[in-house]
Length: 443
Picture 1 (cartoon, one colour):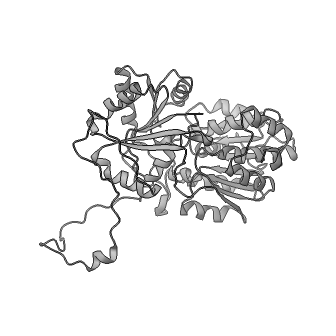
Picture 2 (tube, one colour):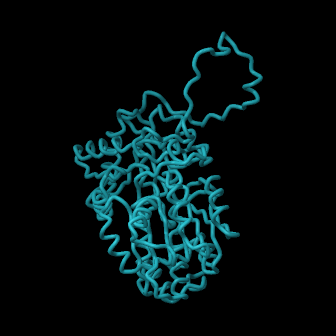
Picture 3 (cartoon, helix red, strand yellow):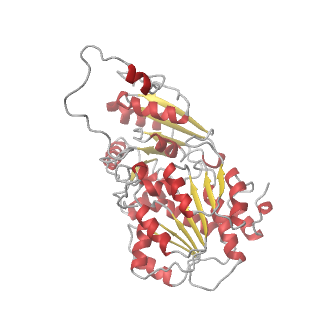
């Protein structure tokens, strides 16, 4: 099966060939014909499977088939993070190089005036983060009356980050008659609820089981005490000759601290997270891609927005609080069918997090101890099974451990609860599974 057999024009097929793509991926095989037919689409695919081209190519084809002279935008693509917005915009430009399409990208963290000037010149495809898009609308820099196609990319992440209010405001401003496309790595129940009110009899595409990791990624766990993690990471980078490795931490402060320690150890490193200016984030990513930085240390804000071709290594310096984020993190390697390696440095206090990840991906990750870094406390080999509530109710209290008349322990606030990690993206503050509205977070 080729791209031309899917109904794409010679110009678009030529552009994909220029990028080294001749055979459509499974998500592209199913999504492209559905989008070309004008149907609403709800598509889920593992990260790194060519999802962006799955909506970009047919979107460009539909605009080319029905040319208009308005100032647009005719297609609106919403993404949760600046990095993902820039990545999608790059894809639009690459695939539209042989068709007369004008594209622009807008996001926060940079001056708004240049974006306003760009929009006033007219644009066919606009890629945006929800917050900055609403800022531009409120300043009369953009109108939505010509939008024919709406794409929500990584929609579940937008809900996690608290963009639901902005998204609903944007939806209310769009023409009622339009094509709607929902693309995401996973679909939570909240996303399916949003889709019910947004999509009209959609074509559903799902090319992989929910929350599964790509088979092309070799995964392993390195048990190590927390105090030895940095030294072990430095050893692995040097001994294996890694020239390009993406490392994930849970917090922004942790990312900065690890970067400084690696630099002192003679390993070039840079950090990328929500507190960094957009200019600093762009420079760090560019230096990493160019090979000037060996280690890029990132928080989960980068878990879905980074697209680095043939990235060989991903390291979880700390496991994520949310098991699903593990899948998105390691999905930065092994993209588009390439092989990749994801390893996690896990200390004893992260045992429950590891168990949650292994339950999610339905496999036990192999443990590999490194000589000289053996941990004081071993990790469990198998995740503990969840307790049966019915058995717990029938069990008699023993040894005076019956009713407790003291204060009840505080429960989690808001479900996934990433609050306090400094990233401001957790469901504890977001709409999430509790159904409460969230405040918009910086993208």
